[in-house]
Length: 154
Image (cartoon, rainbow, N blue to C red; front, side, top):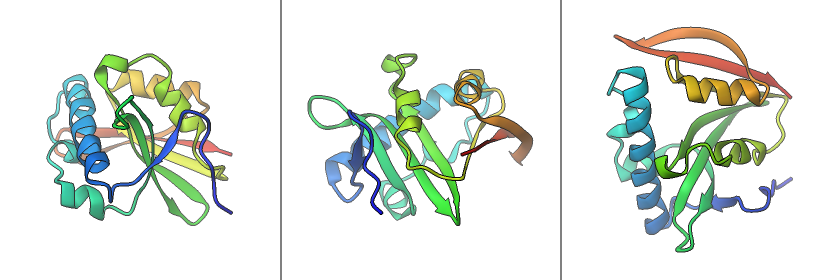
């Protein structure tokens, strides 16, 4: 069964050069803010190439501007019945306008949804907790880089 995202959210095709380049720019902007919040610049998406972005086995949904370029996006993957939110990025000029919530709500139904975010990224952790996610654990994924893992049962 094919999932159709909610109104205002579209499927993003990373095979499209404009969309892929727009996603790369968007995630660099968003993850730069997160790097500042968590005090660590080692977030892999900050240095990801276009080839790497396209090679990732992710499904993308987004909100686009009037030119069709993404201003907010969510990427996810499946592991059995578990939907893993791999990325959630919003243009910093559009923070706190409900775009992150709208994108999470647009995800296909899943028995379990998991996500990881910087442990010290309090705005992201508050968003996920407000959306029904529970804190599972904190893990040091690289020296000095801590992430919080969260889970929501569907």
